[in-house]
Image 1 (tube, rainbow, N blue to C red):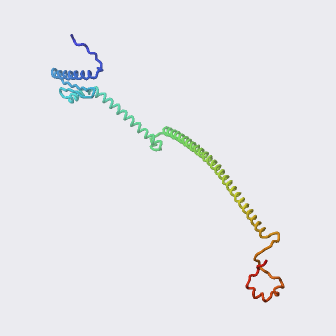
Image 2 (image 1 turned 90 degrees about the vertical axis):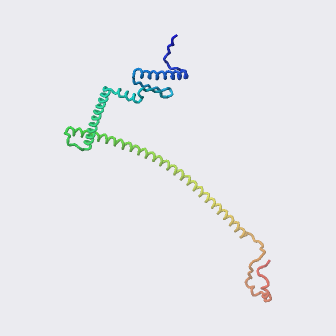
Image 3 (image 1 turned 135 degrees about the vertical axis):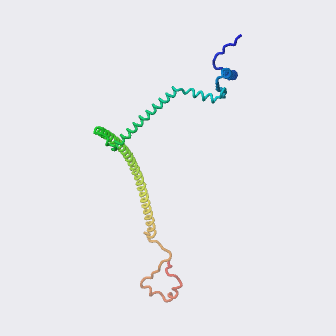
Length: 251
């Protein structure tokens, strides 16, 4: 009974896939060796596993066979295509170089240099270009100045609002300070008035005590003043004893 035909698709079982790879790899390398010996051919086989492991076979050496393969791949047709591509790049470079030189010449003309080779028409075109560029520059300058003026006006309004707020705050603080000063002055004035009233009342009481309105009997020491005409009537016997008692103690 013959062997059944195997369907060519990826083997899902990992173990079976590894076993199949090992068997067929050895068979492939064996067939390559047989082909090189039987037919005197230069055969090279390079194989990488799913894990990145390298398997190779070369009847004359892998490097030598690869060099020969690269020499055979570069045919005269490919050489012609490379030359055509090189010429295309050369023409492109020449075109860009001429354009660059033209732009440099135009820039020098706009700066007022190298005007000798230009005719009247070219000079008129150059003048129109300069006038157009000058008009655009002035327009851009006016736009920038207008924007700056708007910014300055905006800042001025903001500073004015801030100044008004500061003035209101300062006025409120001044009114508060003035009210505090008035309250302090009124307290000082009332304190002085009460102190003066209290002082006057005490002085009145003292004066009332010092000046009685009714006669009273005073007992105590007072300065004795002899009546007129009695100084000569004091007996001489009392003159000698005058120093033995103090004058002024009377009932």
